[in-house]
Image (cartoon, rainbow over all chains, first blue to last red; front, side, top):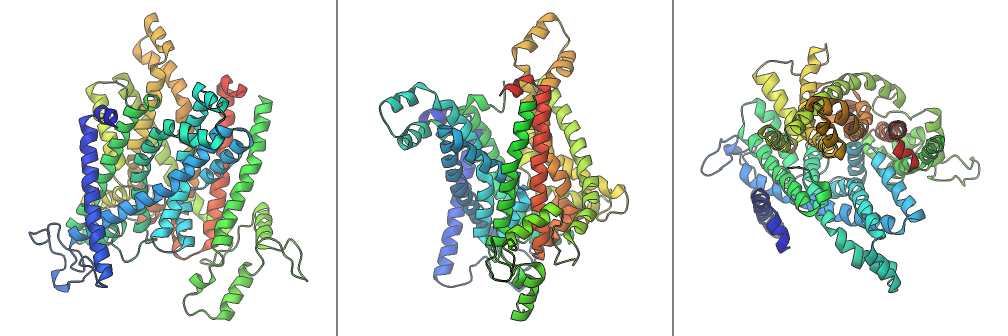
Length: 285
Length: 317
């Protein structure tokens, strides 16, 4: 860990700082949400204030208000909360699934590997966005549909990279030594090989997270998925028509919030790749 | 070579089977009948039953063990059988065969997506080549930063901002519609620029991987000009990952861009998909998913065969 930190340049460190800031905001939003739910009260970001509609940014409302008089800043905070929910939950589905299948396929080879490759090829053939939308529709409204949809389609990328890496390790001396020592396959896979491919998991997470957030924005924008809670996608949808009426603050605030988060994550992903896996360098000097 | 072709074609079978099973599980097993959603909250039991009978959702899922009916008269076998015949079901929204709906939509989608692919690839590849030629310099670093920034802008924002700023505020392009070629310019521009960031980064990596190979240094030592090396030697070899990347995009040519078509009113498959999703027109969504997946399989096969023809090393693997 220490050596990783020293290998990240200043850009990546700032990116990490921004992500942590976003996370703190999301946590605050979560606390807000839970408290409102516990008290069975409409949360402050959902309360309609007819008289405060379309207020431009001011001291009381730093980012203005939307068409129902709700504070844009507070709704943005909730959007961050939902974005982190989506990013973390989809990673929790996609990454374990991809890692386990990648390990099994890469390590055992033969029929097991053929099965894993078949599974990957089948899921990867599906037209991505449409498949996610279809899963979200079928599983039902709400965040669970989005988690399942994105998680069940993006695991393939994780699986393929892990499998490729595991296949390189399979014939290494330390694995052969472990076999000779009589260790079981499970033990070798999870206690010996897995730590050596763990850096890929980190890189994959840093790629999947912004991708999941962006996809959620897209899906929510289309009206599928989250209802009631102000996700960034829904906010963009609401802000769209207001933009043509001259209300610029809502749209600008949401797009900037999404843009900054995705940008810093992309930058972090690049830096992690450069630091952790020389074979996958995105930049050459 | 022939063995490789035969092997690849044989591999199509389990994957095609997998696609059909996956689609069936998603739409019939998990999804079930869209009767309640399509008919609305006040649907009576009779109307739901009639809906199910009309669209075949009253049959058992896998095999039919009812007394008077054929063993193979189940949702699964009907689905596969119809697919083989080319019958993709009936659209609940348009009340016509899905195949007709799709046929209408493919054309407009292609008029949008093909220019985006061609234009986008030419621009991205040119930029990547320039970056690789001047690697490490200001232009290279600037393009890399710009690409990362462009890549981070959400697709939705590209479409909205493009439409708002260029069409509404500046009045340079028509805002909506599909009357003539002019109506396609803005959506194509937006499509090109939204994918430019990721494309340039990828192509640049592909070209750079090639440039660092020993044969390029040999060519330089022999005295070939940098341009000649780039265009005549490096580009050809770097084209392999580039071709993979592009071929991955081919199925999307047909399924169309969901957002662009919906926002600019282009009556392509993307628009059809979105309407189908909103109206729970399962038959249409199912058809597009299955066809898209099968098309991807086919394009993959053609690409792999093209590789084997281009690169002898592949045939031995």
